View (cartoon, one colour):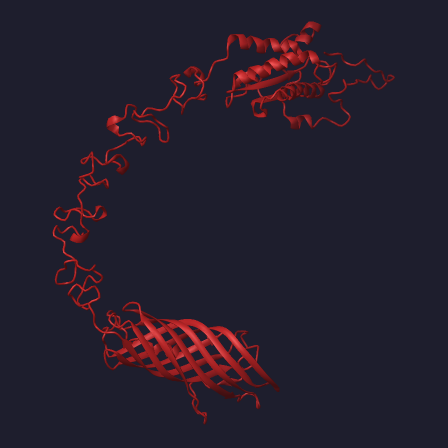
Length: 519
């Protein structure tokens, strides 16, 4: 089928782009039954025929649709009695590389070699006998091919083609023998063809500019456009933009601006550029904006604004709450506050007092993390404070005295702080604005050697800090012991529900101490 592609090749030119070919051909087989490649000693010579339609793409390439049909017979010389007869059709699409492309040979050379390659479908009904068994196979499989040909130009429109091609269908069922020595598909065919190709068309002036296409160096010029002797549109100012596309035909300009000048090279024509001698932005009619805030430098009262910051009509950063801290630096852009507090409202002295007094009003059941009802009013007041300061987060830190085991005290302090947090969450305080932790007995504020000091050390502290800033409890006391440390408590040690029990020395009878009393 490659062979038929050949006939359609070289009669075609830019003037005659479509060609039809008719050819006769001769198939030869190679497969598991044997081969007759390059051997025409067979007494019964059978030929086939084909046709091609091709289209000129460029001086170097054509594209072709090929078809070929032949009945082919073969008798094995390897195994007596093995034979097959196949009615073979091939339909392929090929790309031809022409050597008469003006670089290797002249385009109008009389002898025009070429190569072609492509692929398509191999269509066969094959009958015969293989390995002592009769067979009938109907085959519809893809194939690839490669072709070498020579075209002899007889005239501008007619040529003779001689080609040889090899076809490689993706099947072994033509001869019904399988298992080639190298485990590859083994049925292959050579196709030798001779044909005549006729190209249609005549020399034209496709763009109707008065210059023939062969001489036209600018084919495709729009109708009615004035051209020079080479068929190219006139360009009075010599800027490379033809007059019919040049918005400024009498002044040398740039192609990107349809032939109009641009002194500062900013992509805005001088006629439309409000700053024609300084490169700027098209969106600002050619004027510069050094800080990229959308306000021209001449009108910008706040040059150097950081990239991406929203500005007002004068180029200054927005300050929605008018507190003198621009929104991009303001942690609380909708609530006025001093720059010293990052633009957020400061906590009132009266509020700080309420937070401090709250510590004295939080009480729990004996030796437990269960809040007493007397604590509820204070926690509700703290929830009201959180609503009053929406830009702040609350830290709740639990502490104990030194009675009992360290790990027990740590767990109890954590659980009591968590209980206070849980109650405040029930008062609609957002979970991401309240944090609890426990320090156990590690951060006393009074002497644990006295009952009064122990009472002061048993406490839950409440502090506000700007959301995103360091936790206030951690600022005061450092990092709290982690939950993972609590989980390492040995089995059998007391938890928040009971005070630890201490045993007497082993030599004495076990003695129990009364539970540690704490409030």
